Length: 306
Image (cartoon, rainbow, N blue to C red; front, side, top):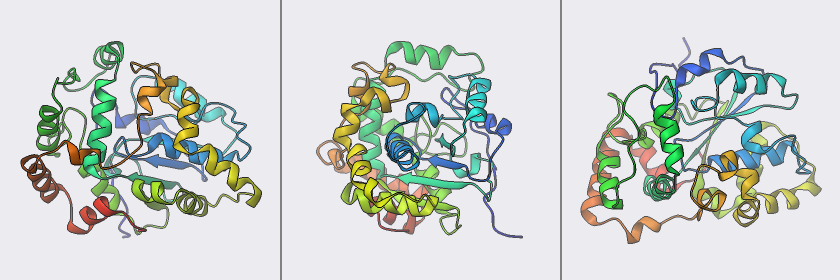
């Protein structure tokens, strides 16, 4: 038997429910965009939208075209009906590890990873910028499994210690009160050799955006007219996306204090260097030793074509 990804866990918490995928009817040319979180998901959705619609004339905002299927907030029938009526090639978002998603050999899986410490800094901004109403919605929505998402602590160091040393699921050892970034990346890394799974690194996308976007187009087998490339690369630059934040941010940015401006914060790396102490980085080393193979850790910290 071929070594195929297997769905071995059910992930249900305040944010998502992996069983929602049970009702999804796939098409042969579907695209799934995956990340743990804060690793370039919204950016990649925008990239794929512009590759499919090089003139930028979208039928709907990219995050509406590309729903987060496992997210509990929008009723499942609404999401499925939206996907069913789409005439264009579909691209669906997930924050699930590969061991929580039903695998389809015909689907193209585009996975974006980012250095754990950069993800943490972005998550802190995301978490502390979340409106109280959003927190209440996540916690009070019927069907929530597990603990509530608590309000963020006042101190970033408290959040780091919890996030890097506690798991939210019995089989995870970091990520609380969200879910494990490390286990998520490792689950996809394990199957990086499959022809329909392609891993990209956020640092590489920042360093040479056009090269990586062309690689994405090649993987997805999207033929883009050569004269359209200049406009696409400009449109998916951080500056342009921030300028049109309401178009790109989930819900137009309405769930965050300060709106899309808060959601699309900086998009930069290495801010953790001025924040995390040597002792705090030792906790990171221990977490990596628990959750990552050495080759996965090396790639997660340094990027490079896989």
